Length: 288
Image (cartoon, rainbow, N blue to C red; front, side, top):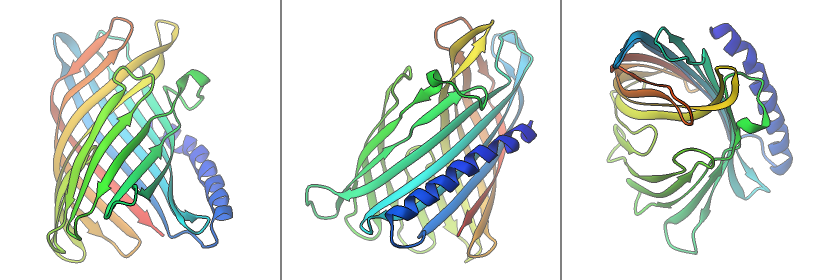
């Protein structure tokens, strides 16, 4: 299961290398920050509502990001993300064995209309969503986002805007949240996708609780019909511990509950609502 994922990650490495060479040509300095963020999330097999059988899911993700200043002025962050979802299915609904997403992302932050302490953040993510790494043109989507950032002081950050997902069933999502850091130990990151509250016990160990959601639409083959769209969604909440190995490497381990999970075909019959359960996640972050 993981062997194929790791083998196909070679494609991600080649694209990341090309990105470094490209961005280096735009900047007169070396990389200010390069990061690799990877996690493995295991959700044990659980029953399916209103039918027999079980569904088990394993999710893996590897994201490479590179920050630099284009033309020595414009702050740019380039990212490459490779997501893999493995599905073990014994329910009565035909489901794909795996789902794959490959995304690139470019984002920047600019002063907004000359307003004090206010910035405009823009991001675009050309992406492929399918069931294999051999993507076709119909798998292509271009999600984008735009939101304002307001920093009234060194402790508070406020965000407000929208994310747009063309060709998805739901195309517009609000972006609304804040970050509050009252001191060096506490951090409240109440932002979309991965809200968290953390407490730095010392320089090495941080305790945290975090929530979040996963959602996506992928084109798959069902009943020998190609380009059928299936949507996966879930919500999760967990507590865990982070450990800073050194100035370059950080790891974390968390466990919690996962709920409101479903796999649903958009334009054909077939939906499974997976019974709530537990999950564990291990994550590694490498910065150079």
